[in-house]
Image (cartoon, rainbow, N blue to C red; front, side, top):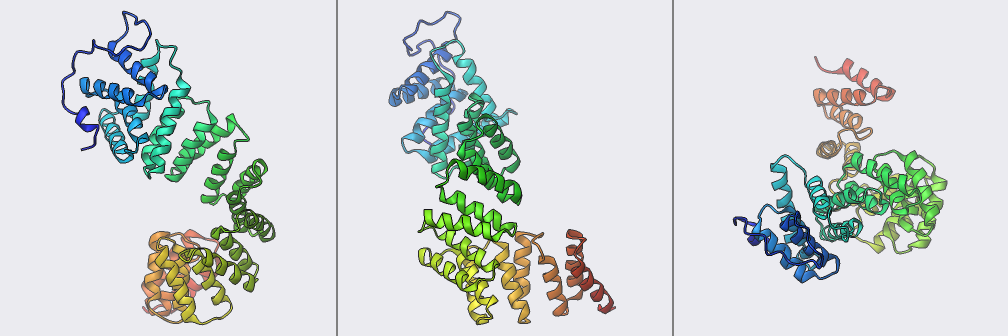
Length: 415
């Protein structure tokens, strides 16, 4: 049971006439419960956190269904270090509201507007900042979903605030809610077209979705606003590399390396670009520099393995590097695919388990089904091989190479 739970459970609603004064004359028609909440909120806005928290607790004790007091008391708790309990309370509140067929963001923002309607001294933007601060604290504690609730509430309170919309879109991107995140970030940019955070986050989102041309346009705008942001330059280079624009990619990643010489991921991107340009010595040097900065960087182990394989190095060494990459980052399908192809080239049946691992992670990974099917055929597993080749054709009907392999296999397959 969280700390607030002992105040929020089971008691009958008590007389609410003993409201704490807010320093303003109360209207006779006002709801005493609402006046109490406004008084507590006013104290929180003035950074009088202890009395505000006590007032929220009293309100929740008198009315266990009080949602606003629960929310804002939890925000104070989070700010004082009780992040886990605050997140649990927010989650519980969300479930309770959902059981009534509603959503926490809509309910909190609507009830808040109603509570302060007759109190012009309480301004909505500072209240929205309380929700933003709550969200930032939760996100910093690893409670990303709960943080998203807070940012959504804040964006409902101040829908014309690009800064708040960016924070909301950023956390939605973290949650991989891409469509919702895109709509929110577009809203932020419609309000402030030069908002660097929104430009950069939207570029990263487009990059993640493989919409590289669009991503490049937003990275370009982002670096114009802040030319000294290393991650922006590095990701810009990565998007250019994905489109085969290697010289431009190299330029951006070299700039990133100048801005952040101790950033290992920049070295990895440089290594990948040199690898694509068949500049193997430079690629090896970049990956080795990345590993010197971070010995547990999976992408650097993988890149170094790819270089050694291209140079015809010791197959055991290549295998070790790929296995190390998989050990450090088992959820990256490309690592399994590369190792599977290496093992298949050596005629080892172990290749199948790595093909299967890659398929489980990303069934549509380019060339995976073709390679998986061809390997199965080579190992005499005709039925399985034909199935993978047929899947490859379904995924890419224009793949002439796979069509030829499939046609030959169908002719040679045992009856």
